[in-house]
Length: 494
Ligand SMILES: *[C@@H]1O[C@H](CO)[C@@H](O)[C@H](O)[C@H]1NC(C)=O
Image (cartoon, rainbow, N blue to C red; front, top):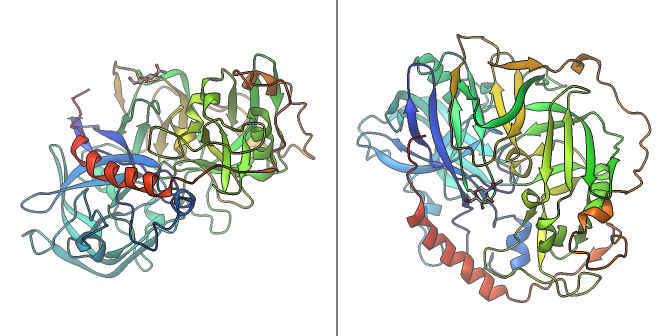
């Protein structure tokens, strides 16, 4: 599916390596390298609509001989590694553009570069980001782990200034005429891991760092038990191409009540996509979520917005998967209320019941058609194991800020996810029939600020958010690009 809105910058650093697992720490960064040319800086709306303010999880890698440093975004929604070429327009452009501050790759500068001889590389992500060029092979290195002949794309022409590490199914590679062993498969071929599987722990929005563990699970990073659920094949082709699972219930829970939300789409086929910042669910379901929390659609921002103060609400949503007895993940409001700008001050609501309050973006947006995506606003609250061999996902509630570690490797190729039980009723999931709207008994409890006792405004009304500070906000973003390059930390061993 690819990079959607909030991009993950991963600081891919090998924290530890043994015969069976490889772990990289990843760091969340605001999305960098906005194209600040005159066409694009005309309005902050444009920036917001393109979701360029959003972050992602990134990792620092080395490619080639001698090693060239590149920081790449980790993406479960795509399946290729690609890097921007140092000679590409986006990296060489000077003046208002920041160039490729996260690094680029020069084929001429690497004695181990080889043209893969396999034709053109061309990838387009769901948010319109794209890169074109050639396939090549070279050494791909993370920490002490070197993969000698990794096939990668070279972005000779791209509209994003940093590359991606896609860790999805090989069948979802951007190639049209051939399939090559992508990173998770190549790691197994190299004997670094015993099976094609990894676990992703994004951690708290405020913590900013997480980890990806290839070949194992870490039982200290989640609470309760891991539950295994099926990944669904593409209904048209029958092939496994994305991490599509069955979302079977959503509840809104607060101290004023509990509501079971409904959708004519249940069970909703949702794709777990770490390369997407927000989550996108069916309109009927999302309009109920917005009404519960008092989020409103802003025509200016073209997204649902909410007073930033609602991050402190103790209300939460409970997402259930794979039917009764399947995994349940709670999403707290502080994980669902996200800034609209990088500056200290958020735009203000300029009319309506929230007039004068700071406006934030709500983490679940509506989509009138699939694919529905659960991005980082969901994934931070879950510990997710991706088993590409058995086509299963393991899921449990994350343990935010966990500092202990207990790594359990997969036993051998094809082994099931360790310490996980299977969802008992996933083979008898069915639709819920005609949806009944909830009573919104939980709604009052989401308004912890109690700014008024009026029920939440109807979600369909358009709200205006003042976006007058275009110049200022843009400048802050440009500064952010420059400043943030220096603070990409090397993580300590876990
Ligand atoms: C995790 O750590 C961050 C930063 O140290 C902190 O802001 C956040 O509140 C912590 N989260 C939890 C759930 O403890």
